[in-house]
Image 1 (cartoon, rainbow, N blue to C red):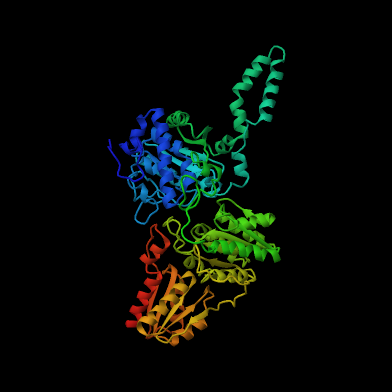
Image 2 (spheres, helix red, strand yellow):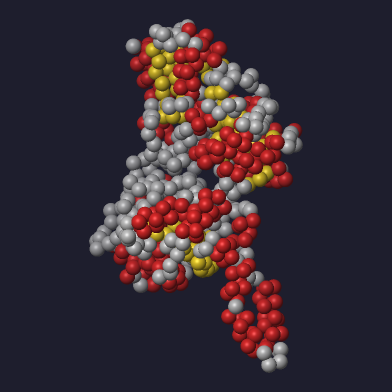
Length: 638
């Protein structure tokens, strides 16, 4: 047994610091499990209040996690968490208490399950709806190896709105392979669930009207001469079948899954009984568990959407911790306000999000123009093709999705939008490095995977004001456009009336004859500051050009500037491979304009970048002001 824990979060804990590993949970009493649940919640609240993170999802599955670890051995059995933002309790119970205070800090624990972090993390996640497919692959590998361990996927009802989850269910049912799926149903993903499926999952047969109806029918049956009592007994035996006809049992039964539930996801004893029963069943099984998001922490129970992903807060009150003066509006805020402003004068604008109205800044639009707002659920592919359908009928759809999640919609962007030249506006929030959510959430590749698609205009604003201009510009174009912008606040640029930008035209923001900086997006202002400081230190003047457009690239302007400079620095917060600087190099090569030029490219390296504060990560890869200045000074000295 571990005698003590060095974790600063372990103070006052009795059981959690003394766990000899997750296998210890299998022999714990009901009383100890209840105390352990309280301690787990205490540590999660303490860590997230300091570091930020996904609080409400993890608080909601504490008892579920305990029940799973009491029945399954994660050293042998494979447990696959969907998305993974609800896996904090699992991390704590699988030996990571001592490092849990480093959650989401640079060099510390990831906010998601990660194979390199622990042998108990059986599959790395961060995007939704992957668990069933991954678990099925593990189950097939088990069977091919002649092994007998259990494989379980734990998936939320929000993630069950995505098509990938049903592709996995369909294949699993068809193979009739031993597989356990635990559906964690809290009636929310990030925002409130939408769509017919969520209505189906949430049907309740315990409402007063139905209960009275059932009682009246039973009494009427009993009064039938001779056969009444027997019919009533038969009806009672058939009740479960009747309920399954009106509940998710019929849905999952159609996939050839044995359906159990719904059961109380905060009743550890009942879940343990069910999981023990499930271990003896053959074929695919789905256990439907009802939980409450934010369970055990009143502020999160009251406002689970806010506490889904939250920054630092006071644990006693749940109020956000303020650092310094009131922060500037974020790019997300500016996008949402601008779209509302433009929609006032353009009734054809329709806003679309994939389960993240608050995260993409569309809450105001949803409240102001509810008839023109659509939340499609966690269905990014559907969102894009749905938008294409709207655009084909003369509307102007604006699809707001995080850059990393839009990767799922690549085929739809190519086939359904661009091939048909439909005027869909793709707004990619969280372009570039996002911070503590890490590698699964960085928008590192969008300029690379978008710029080669024919007919698609691709823009990146240097600041909040230019974001307004680009959104207004995109809504005037006859074909598709994409705008990518970073997470967080900008430079505080004055927000004037949005104007239409000349297509494929950048702006020279600083003149200089000794070197040239070609920049795109949020790194433009950092380049300006670096150029000014470099001139102060060396006396050499550097020109800075804001390209604005990755496609169509402002080729004429770039060629003219390059012909007047021998030393060129290119800067972008995107993968260097295939991104903005690649586009510029292709242009220069095609025009035979590379001879005699010394060129340095700054961007994201050919590697997955881990989690940490945005500023720290930009410094790590040389994309902050200091890093750009160092590269510029070296170029000027060469």
